[in-house]
Length: 640
Image (tube, rainbow, N blue to C red; front, side):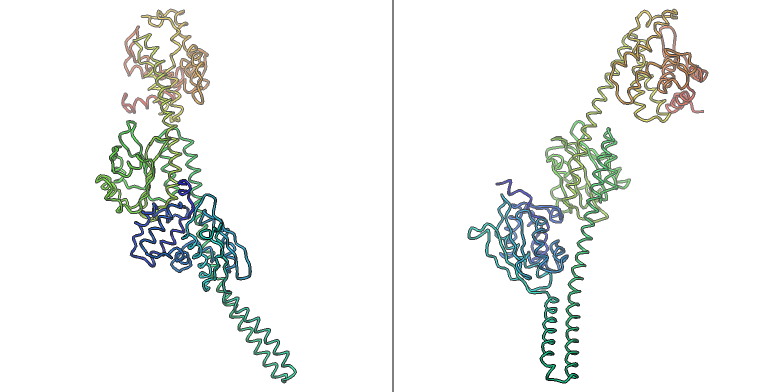
């Protein structure tokens, strides 16, 4: 039973009509207190897409009767839908029809847009009489005041057309005599134009009959004058009836245009929101890093949504603070404040961001002054620094894990924030949460992958302590060269892997050769040169994917030379993979500037001379130039 009472059954436009009536006739009533008692929010009432439950509207009506003392207010509110002060959708809907009969007949189809508690069928009995039957939906228990409110709306249909109140018979009611439905028989007077058209027809028939009778009794001249006067009277009545009909049609057309304009506006909003959701999905699918996800999302918020400002905050890794990450619409001064701001995640915090995070629910505040007494002094001061008036904050939740919050607000547009805004942002927040979670998993896997790579590289260093750190330094140089050459980030990451593992084949070289002091014999040189091919063979056993599939080939070719004199394949020029040409420069420079078993490190100037001398012979000139720019950027060599 509780679940049935909490079902969304009644559109907010119904409550909005009550609110409009209160403003007009009961201005002393505190509407905010009334809504709070009913468990409703002002922004929900203003949102035409929001629906309230039976329990909410029951509490609303109960308190409404208490504060007004008017037990007939339900019917009064229904009639108020026809008033000049009402901006309700029902009034626009009714006036989009030409006559009450059509409006009443279409009421059954339109009722689903206002209530889901019952279904309505309409049947025309006579030209000015229809029968309306409201059948309750299974599991829903309406209240008698809702029957009264329906009768008020039936009254309003005739009132909208400037007619007198209709005659309403209520032969069956679900609230008395064991009735199963609410059935109403509605009859009304003709419209003014229809009345005068009827008068015209009767007058014309009367003139014709009198003329036939008098044609034998009066002269032709007298008869002619009589008929001419009668035709003039028919014409004047017809003109007046047509004038009234045109006014009725014009009123319907104007209101239909207003309804269409509002519909087009809603269609445009829905279309823009659909584009926003689609673009958010595409943006998130292309990003695997948290910074990229956040920057793309906030850019789409700024481009597509009708908010002046927005920001995203994330919980720190130790779960103790909420930190600002990115935003839009803020001045440079405010951005500086935000970058230096964070909130402690505590169970006793009264800050609205932390409450939203802690309770896993969104908040919409259209006037921050209404909650200033509930905020902590720091939160209130922060809001004043940001010049916040109204805002929405929504938590970013993955399963039950609170990752952060999204907040938006309006300063310039003064647009009232609505429940539909919350729904849209919460939907996006869920997508962001999934992407952030996936990005964190990928980052964790990447860190795990890198730790494995460093462990593998360290296993070579463990065999030859004198060359410990060689692979890490080669990696640093190789990535620096790639960046100077403007290579994509993915390529730089691939080079990082290849550089760390470029000497892994040395694990198959015996210590007597690997650690030998002095010059190697030809046979020993041949044995140690095999490490490049062994590196390729070993790394091919690893299931690299995507761009990383180049790693075995690049690592295995780092001893190839530009003139074709290198090993193991004797590749020449552009036959050598670019990554291998980059590793060649990084590997040689690191080797000749570090201490080895058989020599001391070479001075920097001499090492640079070797690099320049070997351009086009051992090395690719473009790679050497990029490496020199890298050394200058790192201030390892002076700029020219």
